[in-house]
Length: 449
Image 1: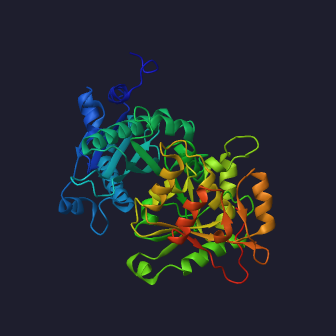
Image 2: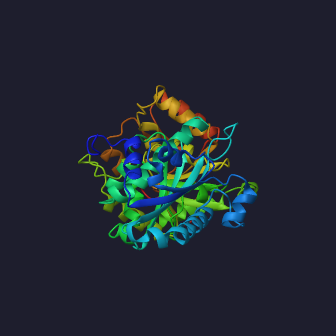
Image 3: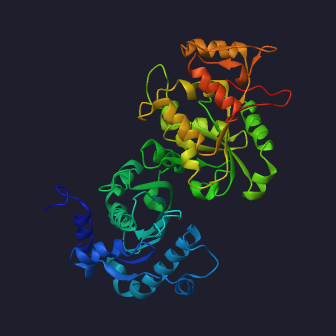
């Protein structure tokens, strides 16, 4: 059947096998050899496959690719890519180079272990030529495996790998086309992709920050990180075993007070938690669900997202961009990588939203959302707000039933009261110290978003 009529993973692999101009190697560690298997089973493999290898043993892997790196890491993947590419060209460039677009596919994966206790993720890379004797192009992906079994995860890696090799020659018209192509037959619930890097003339015009943001906007990742130094890394590397302070909000107006909230909360972290962790880390949290113009009901554009990110980075902290805006979803994501307590540094308007959201996606609505949030070892540290700002925002949001007391023109979280019976639950959370009163330095008052 012609490729344009049917382009599933079987036909992608077969079409590459039947293309005499493409020839390459496969090196896979940690999730079987599922990518190579597709090319070996659909027929015509000798037309595409120069070699397959799977160096599972650590000593064998070190001998092939060098010691000194973690086995599931970007440095290990790059060592694999360099070694496989060098060997491929040294063996075949003279005899086939004039008519062949060479490629090397590599991956190093930590699929689900027997107990399901490991970080189930991996690095996937491809080096390829667009024309014979052409310069190499690299694409590197970091993925999270979401399937519940090892076998399903292997299958998903196999599909992704075939899609990636095929997309290198058939779906590079735009980043959007590329992402859509490599997720075909996978759906967005089997693999998350939270980092893409590339190099080479095949990717001229691609903007790494736009593509990074589009991983969330397009539903390919639950969250991505824009570190303060702009050295993009996957969230698992930045968050691993960190004592986290997360500051979510819309950030319509960004001021130094937002950074002060993070700094003040980090300063309050118990010494025991700092010693147990790899250090404290403060991050602003943006949600694409809450950035669009509320009056128009439209999602934010990529440019608007990146402007928000840049404004916050100038305050000296990185930014996590989330698909969802609910705090229980943000804390659940962070809990993948750290088991230490998570502190949310927020102002009163975010605090009110936590109790005002409908949570219709949950059967238990508000009660379930709060249970999910606070059973994840979370504390909310809520900073005071000028009463004028609170009144203005309450009117704009059409809040009803909330009352407050002011002290010297300020309202603190323990002087804010929702209507009964919600107030009884609210007071319980305060008295149980799930919600803590922010105690800022003298000049600090919480910003309004």
